[in-house]
Length: 228
Image (tube, rainbow, N blue to C red; front, side, top):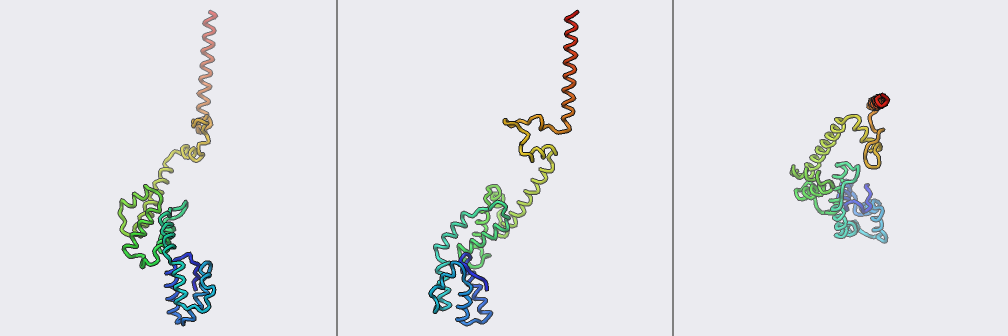
């Protein structure tokens, strides 16, 4: 039997437990024993001194402790503040939003109900924590939570594809310089001589030698003219 520690929606756990007990044909005593053994963590504290508690009383204790308005207010605040984490996939974010919504509104019923779907859709878009991304999704006006997730996945994949194409279209030297993180720049942000491409250095050195030779020849001519 699934364990319950008070960190997941209590109504979901109670519903699953009751369905299981109906299927197994448990008596009220069987239900109390199995439910008691299913409680762990903070939920396990509810059974202290409850040797003669009935199944209905134990369920009511669970609802009062983990389905209270105070708990819902806390989860509501967490849902409002929920933002996408670094490296978190859109699917992971959507799943967590749905879980937090159940904790916030334990009696919300079916998640695909129109009002519930609107709540999930808006919470998901707000949690993206990217104004430009959020605006793009709202411009397409997704009608459901699943539509919003599908659209976000498609837009993100398109963006990554465009970024990869831009990166591949850059000259090789520009990409290597960008990868170096500006290490070939001096303190003022200017590239030093070592930042030139390797294939350009021989040409630069050759030009310098030519200039040096021309200067030497010019000085010799000037000196001869003075003698004469």
